[in-house]
Image (cartoon, rainbow, N blue to C red; front, side, top):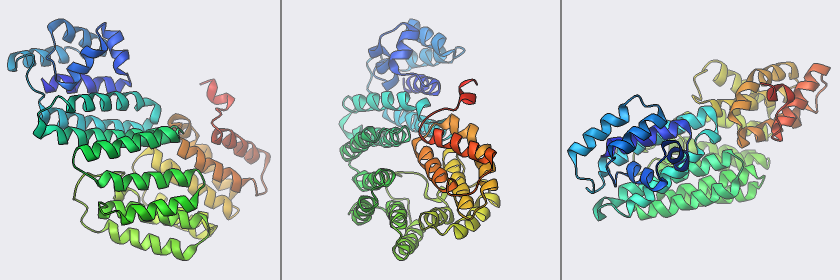
Length: 383
């Protein structure tokens, strides 16, 4: 089976469709789609043809269905290896889409696949359920991140808690440690630095925390200390983060972003902005973003760091350069529609408004202010 179900789920995910939307387009039931994607049922010829037509798959699903029907009885056990490997690849594809196109393009697929996986886990053989629960936990963790990117902190926390529960079902407690890092990030974006620092400290001290999780926790702690002006504590946390990041991080599930993509110098520069050491921040950004344009590699992260670079420029009264940076970034900002990016824009606007500006610069800053509040400018609405 597994190849048909996974390919169907992949095609659906790429289109950003829910199970309900695919069922409507293929004129089959939602339950049938769930059973096909989870591998609990083999596709009939009619169902395969309908799904192939709905997804414009060019006969790929029909061929996979024929292979599935030849290879196993309709009610054969779930093929766990195929399902876990296939959905693992789909999760990475969805992450790539989320990084480059924003949360609205992946949210529906993440939620529906998480539901399929948790349902499948209860029907799999007992000794194979752990793998499915762990994969479901990874989907839930990323769904929580996308909810935060969409500005829905309550949903972000709910999905993070589900990730902890499903990770425990799969026998891995490390998600409980990483969840504290995620909650620290949410507290930071809500402006509650004290809570962010406390949660990051709890994550680092959690008995299930890996070196990777401790590295992420120390970065959150550093940014929390920076936001309240404590340079010494910030510097010490950054040093701890570097130390943890260089340890063996192969143990257990890999929660959160790749630590190597969060360039430590860019994190340091970000902290310098909060500490109002704008010249130091601007120098670091110039080196890391201009000399190493491939870091970070995804649109979301690069946009956030580039906006921070503009904030540092505004802080040293280079408003003209700062506005040029923001203006060049506007199409990407509009496409991503990210709450974390909007928060960075707000910090830029706050700093830019303290500077002498030409009429053109003032107009750009006010356009940016509207974007920071989730409003699309008139020129964007006409596109």
